[in-house]
Each structure stands twice: as C-alpha cells, then as structure tokens.
Length: 157
Image (cartoon, rainbow, N blue to C red; front, top):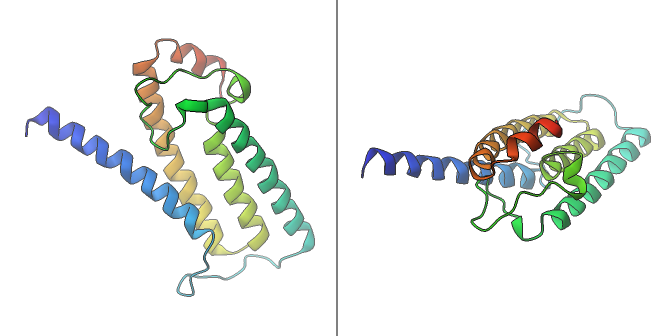
C-alpha cells in the first residue's frame, strides 16, 4: 500500500468514525444507562420541560426543512456525494449547516428536560463530534465547489 493509499484509507476511517460516533451519541439520548452518572444538576420543573420540548420541536422542524432543501445531496458522511450540487438556497441561505445545528439543539432540548450530567455529557460530546465533522466537510466542499469560499464568507453560521 502506497503512502497516498494509506492516507486515503485513514481519511475514510476517520470519516466513518465521526459518522458512527455521531449516531452512537444520538442513540444514547434514548437510553438511560444505570452505570452512568444520572445526577440532576438542578431540580426538574414544568418550565424546563416545556422549554426543552419547544427547542426540540423547532430544531426538528429546521432539520426537516434542511433535509428537504438538500434533496438528493443528502448524505450522513462529510464527503459530498459524487453528483452533488452546492445548496445555497432555502434554509441554506441563512446557515451553512442547519442539520448539524438541529441535532445539537435537539440534544440541548433533551438536556434541558432531563437536567442531568449524563445528558450534559452527551450534548458536549455531540457538539465536539459535529465540530470535527463540519471542519472536515468544509474542506471537502472547498475542494469540490469553487464558489464555496464565497458562500462561506456570505453565510457565517
């Protein structure tokens, strides 16, 4: 295996690892493991419950809109698919990564509902994984689409 092939192999492994970790952390939101610290940070209240639900609903709607706007360009991997186009319309006029941010806000909403260290840990972990994924994805997008840098400068978030 040449040095070039080895480098590409490790890039592919890194991409798949990020996607796996993202889905794994998201799935942990649906389970409360007994061996993880479930201590609440502050007492639950109806206000936090409804605030968390509201954040989740809004984030879920934004996620659905971003999925619709991406259309056939949708992929869980940071590397754009071969015949993809750069989407700069719809919700992508306002934010570059609405689906990733929606996932983060859904996690924040769950944390606000549960108010436990476990969900705080999941939210922080998901933020880190998505940050690495966005950084990698933007490198690929800059290579593939010549006008991505202009789009990135126009749409900051």
